[in-house]
Each structure stands twice: as structure tokens, then as C-alpha cells.
Length: 359
Ligand SMILES: Nc1ncnc2c1ncn2[C@@H]1O[C@H](COP(=O)(O)OP(=O)(O)O)[C@@H](O)[C@H]1O
Ligand SMILES: [Mg+2]
Image (cartoon, protein in one colour):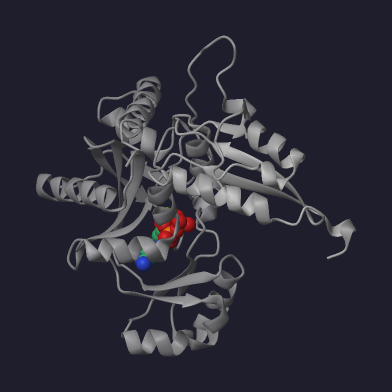
């Protein structure tokens, strides 16, 4: 590497973990060994309380020469403001973040991870729940382990799309099929496939959106959705029903035409209502959801009954969207729903802060 390729190497160490000291010792070794011709080393410590700090003592020692470095660094120094927008300001007002973002880099755990590091309470599921629900394949695998009903499917990588026909045949999937990218939303990249001849095009389309694709059996039934709200004590709303004017509930239906009807509550008998609400709570728990989620089902009345389709950890949230309408019909109006979500965000944050990071 030429000197023009010099790299600023930010060494992160410490952390809110029982392995805090081990990390501080490792960091001292790395600082002592790193070639200062090649690297401008910047040690950034994370204190036991989770504050990010410029490790001033370590920097000073490094400036005096690596022999001055201690055996173990200390995660102490000037605080580094990780995310100024969400850091409580001088007015001392507590901060809660409400992420109203859909899809990758919003609903998939990335923003949630950033907010965890910043130490701010936020509405909705954490990193794992968000990531699991965003990936339709991993969500299905976890739901299957928990015995929740769903349609049969196969998962494929974008590098093996030519195998789609064989995979479908050996899994014994029956047409029509639905082909989807694992990581999108809003019906983007979703196709209904009537026969084997249509499969390559649908698979190729889905592969333009994600590395992983799902090919699943079509359900022949109604679309029922349930809102779930809460942390450990989550509760289920009344169920709602989507009445699509298209071949399936596609992007235009959701956002363009406005012709799609929402029936709230869904016309279901008491037994079916209780069954779908219970399934929604089971799915929510299995997928480590917190705060809120909308659990979507197919309902084959004369067939396989309720089948989980997917879980949205940041459901549509305009006052006329399904999730707020479900809660309104369950006795919680839009402003009260926002209050409850904020309360749940703080509750979860406080609860998780109690856990020990000491050995
Ligand atoms: N297996 C299936 N059987 C019947 N309809 C389906 C199936 N999968 C998807 N659909 C239809 O496509 C729509 C979008 O698929 P979905 O998996 O919910 O993706 P998105 O995350 O984009 O909402 C569903 O609301 C439904 O109308
Ligand atoms: Mg959907």
C-alpha cells in the first residue's frame, strides 16, 4: 500500500458487555502493533453505559510512542455524539424515535440497530424482530418451527433461478404460485404464476429486487389482517379484511387506485375471529416483535383455514390505513394509538436497560 493509501483505522473497543475488559486489552495490542505509516489509528471506546468516547489517554500515549501504551485501554474520554438528531438537547427533553420507514434500511433492523447504539427508545420491534419479519424466508422458517400454518414454499438464490422449475416440482407445489423477492414490500416484484411456462419471467423479475426469492403455493381464500400492540403483554385487535379489486392485492391497489376495500371488523364468526387473533399473537411472539405489527393471513374457509402470509413490523400508518383502523375499531383512536406506541417504546427501553452487562 502506498502512503497515499493511508487509512484512518477507527478501532472500536469496550462496549456494554461482560467482555468489556477483554476488548480493552485486545485494543491495546492492536494499537501497539498497527503500522503508523499505513494507519492513522483512532481509538474509540464504548463505555459500560454505552456512551461512545474518543479514548483521549490512549491517543496521548500513542503520540508519545507505542511503548507508552498501557496493557489495556480505558474506554474513557471526550464523549462522541453519535447521532446528533436523536441526542437529548440542552433542554433535557427525553427523546423517543418513531420510525415510519418501510422496506430495506428502515423496517429491516438497520435503523433499529443504529438507534440501539445511540441509546434512544424507539417505536416498534428491535433488530432481530425487524430483520426476521423483513426476510420472508427467515420469517417462514421461524413460523414453521413454531408450528404456525402457512402455504408450502421453496426458497431460491438469485444465482440459481434456472433451478426454479425443478425446485417447484420436487417440493410438489401446485399452481398457481406466487413468486416474490424475500426482502421487499408493497407487492413490489410479486407475480402470480398460472403455469410452469410463466415461472422464468416471474423469477427473473423477483431476482431484480433481491438476492433471495420465495416461490410459494397460492392460497385460495380471503385476506385477513390483525393488528398487534404491546411488548410482553401484547394484545390483538379485531381482524380486518382486504377486498381487492385486482387479481391480487398489488401495488396499485395499495397506493394508486384507492379502489380496494377494507372491512373492519372482518365478517367472521366468533370462533374464526378468536382463532386468527390467537395466531397473530403467536406469530408476533415467535418472530420477536415488540411495540406493534400487523399480521397478515389468508383464510381458506373450506380448505386449510388460516395461513400466515407475512408480518409487517412497520405497517401502513395513515389514519385510513388498516393498522390504525383496526385499533380504532378496537377502542383506540389514532392519537391514543400514538400515545400507546410511545409508552411502549419507553417501557421496552427501560426494561432492557435493567439487564446486567457485568460478569
Ligand atoms: N401465496 C399467496 N396466495 C395468494 N395470494 C398471495 C400469495 N402471496 C401473495 N399474494 C397476494 O399478493 C399480495 C402481496 O404479497 P405479500 O406477500 O403480502 O407481499 P408484500 O410484502 O409486498 O405485501 C398479497 O396481499 C396477496 O394479495
Ligand atoms: Mg403484504
